[in-house]
Length: 422
Image (cartoon, rainbow, N blue to C red; front, side, top):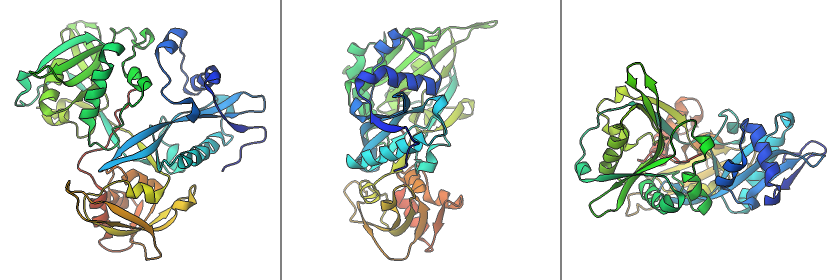
């Protein structure tokens, strides 16, 4: 555990210190809030997972917390400690406070039998040095009104309904569709608490930036079942040539191609608008395949989840593999030395779903691949190729042919992504 400077100590933060905790967050991320907004927006972590660094005067100098997630991974789920709300007061930086908090987070997560940690990185350069690997991407698209979509059978038979988003009315609906749409996608974390389900739909006036209240459009089949939804708001704008409003989509989720087509056909044809700004989408999202003119899209690819392997054998055995493999990994890990050394990963018999379970054991056999725990975390969800990392000089092949077989086994046919709503 990294020692703190004299006078500083790690402390658990009870809910009674909520105001102090939130003040550090505001100072760290340079934003303001008000009592009305704070009353509407729930805290989504549990207070028994909140911790801070306290200075000699009893003032909170830095804070962090974590979520308890059942993280979808290739072929299964695994307990994950989602690191969040990490920040330090600007006048308390460069004192090793973050490093001490990360070390504490790792120890506390392992004590709770959470073999991986994941996060969204506010600053991308920070977390790699603690062994987190960039494991997934998302894509944001900007589309012109009227962008054409390829025909999908059944889309015309679906209907849409528009309403103002309401927590009581729409929370269960949104949760059910979100779960169904993300089934089988690594990283797609469900909202398992009332606070999270509320957070998705809250709409404080301070967040609207002059736009309309949050709306929800739902797509229904002939039986009335909901097959897709989008949360969005429009902001009017009048240009010399006429109306040029913007549709800003907070979240858009559909269970199949027909529902995707019907949902986006609605969003792309709203009166008085000119531009549709999409939410984070998987890099293999159905919408991207349906666009008649993909060059007309203005895409922006962002890093999504970062993954840190905390308990290597449990983590690697907790997912399935796309192909059989028998490989010895020589792993470096300067922060969690129990992960360091050589590990044999051997897949078992092919399962009915076409995937392969694996056993992971310590070995003294010669290494086939050499890599850092950061690169192993990047490959863990199947969204980063070990072969691509080798071409970048981050993974070293010691045994000819081992890289190819391991890269295929670690890969996955569905792109990972966490559909997180801020």
